[in-house]
Amino acid sequence: MPRPSWTVRPKGERDVTAVVALLADVAREGNWIATEWPFDLDARAAAQRDALLHRYTVGWVAVERRVIVGDLTLWELGRDEPELGMIVAAAHRRRGIGRALLERAIAWAEANEKTALLLRVFPDNDAARALYRGCGFVDVELQRKAISRRDGSRRDAVLMRRPTAETRRE
Image (cartoon, rainbow, N blue to C red):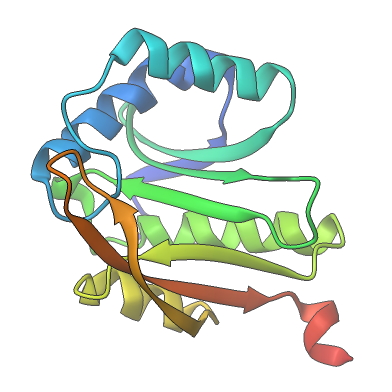
């Protein structure tokens, strides 16, 4: 198998502007994430910098030719089951980036004695759900009308959970 043209590394403060730009690109697609476009880029960047500085979050970025093409963030780090959010640029999907980011998050969770990772995904996001299942996540529940939209509508979400190796041994 050829070596990928991208790498995964820990996310740092220097990455925030590019990560927020990627978030805006994915949000503009309108289908895959709860974040809706438009949003205040500067405010979102400030919140992400603050979260990284105070260690409320930890994350990784996928980089190709010095451009961030993927991001995974874990938050609620004080809990036994932190939640994750992940985005990958449209042109870079189905190239293993999502799996590589998830593998980093899983390794972090196991090294930090977390019992599981959680995520929420829209029920119609078949590609993402297949990826998550392939990485050991299972459906926990369908959360009806869990995601509020600006237009007043609400969307369902599927809560998925991936136990860590230690939890699976018990």
